[in-house]
Image 1 (spheres, rainbow, N blue to C red):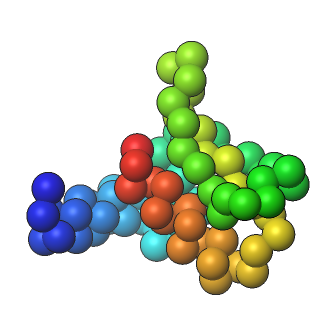
Image 2 (spheres, rainbow, N blue to C red):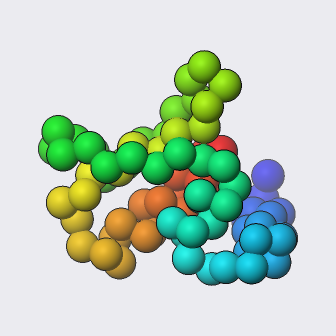
Length: 77
C-alpha cells in the first residue's frame, strides 16, 4: 500500500465515522482501547486476540502524542 492509498483509507474512515479524533474513531470502529500504566518502554501497541481488536496505550504521555500513537495503532488494524 502506498502513501496515497493510506491517505484515501484514512479519509474514508473519517468520513464514515464522522470524526477526526483518533480515540473516538477507534471506539467507533469497535477497537477496544485500554490504558496500561506498566507500559514504560512503549507508547502503545495493537493486538488482535480472541476475535477482539485491542489498542493498549501508555497513559503517561501528553495528549497530542497520545492521539498520534492511537492513530498509528489504528493503522495496524
